[in-house]
Length: 313
Length: 313
Image (tube, rainbow over the protein chains, first blue to last red):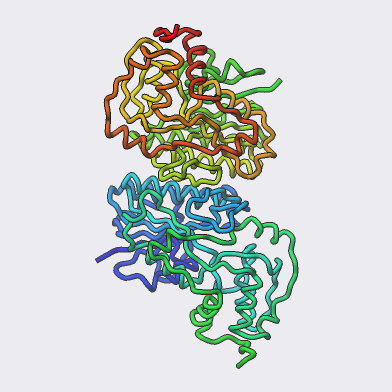
């Protein structure tokens, strides 16, 4: 029977991925959670070695300090996101076998200025330490794969939308907030103009990417092991129009404009649109539209119900 | 008075750079050499801290395990080329000042397939561990510069030609060998077809790049701190034609064709041609032609003389 190790199993993606996995599972995170096989700091000496000692066939490496924290705490970001990843890769190398390693990278590996659509040959010029740590991990993943130490696939996730849960202080939080809060009958703050465009995938699409990355024929990847995932490009105006179509004027009316120059400036440096041809040709599938991203949130997070009824209902 | 630290001062580039520097010099290498201020392993704990303790104004980081060795000895390559560089950057960060750091990267950060000319926005997809280590160092250099820990400039050197000294076993050795040996009246082996094209700079041009990188206004760089240097694209056939023009038929006749499939396959994955627009707009200057590259070798390494006389002389 196949064994799968999930590192970062207690995170938003990990919690949604685990129920879809078959076979024996080893579940790890730095915070305690129900069903945990191991709770430890991946970047501490010896911890990665323990996790791969049983030679799991598939390893999902989802663990990371998020962007805001990696920017605020330089040393912690590098320790967890770079050293933790490198320790994991080294532990696998020393086990001398060849598992599939699926690594969640991020569109934060890209930094402005951008072309109209970021293609598969566009340079990694991150504008955050988080993006730098992800870009370095991608390079390591490719080199370790090329040398046969493991069989790696790196997937650059779009911004996940609609993130379930409570509002948070991340600069990107409003992209989900302006959908999630109104669907819950609550007010949401929009700090940027409606013209801001960004790149999205639903949590359901993200899990689809991970599962596909775990089983695709890596011979088709060649030496370039890291892929920008397909997504939906939408402006904030298009997000709101989709919300209006799905949940009515009352929901859309709960969005309060409160311009924030700091957030607007940060968001300006973020990718807006991709040409994800390679991933599409390898069978990765995006959400069909932003409207569908909202419907998925209603089905998966709100069990099919949202508070404000569509005005047409 | 300005203080300059040169790490890798005993290497081919370091030896040519040092005489061009003014002010107080701190010269470092892992091997003993005349004029050394310090001889140590940069990747050993505490060594980088010692080198920057006096807060040099300019730091040239030229030290590296070369491509072939980094491929043959995985652990040594990562220890010296990645950990050594990171230790240096960390030591500077902890000194809490902001020196200019000039880092010699390499066109090995690029891997096939390539466009007709590699532009400034082409992805880093190295096909060697050496190229991976250089690409990672570039990302660190940009992030440390963005955060204000130092003021870094990374320059991707073309293949240096004509390398002075004896023939070596590097896969790229023949590019210099087919010029250097005939100019010395010796036979040289050519292992690849004349159609192979590559990207060259003379040692003199390389020193010019380093000096320019040390003094350019880095505000003009923005967040993208690493630059492909301008060079001369030439096929092996064009190299030989230039040799014939400079040193005559007798010199060109000393090149013996001995096809080597292994070397031909390695060289296939190497960059052939660049569009180095950014570096040119920032004032970096390439050699005017491959013929001039040969003349520079005759002037600088052969003190103006070469053994086989031009057939027209």
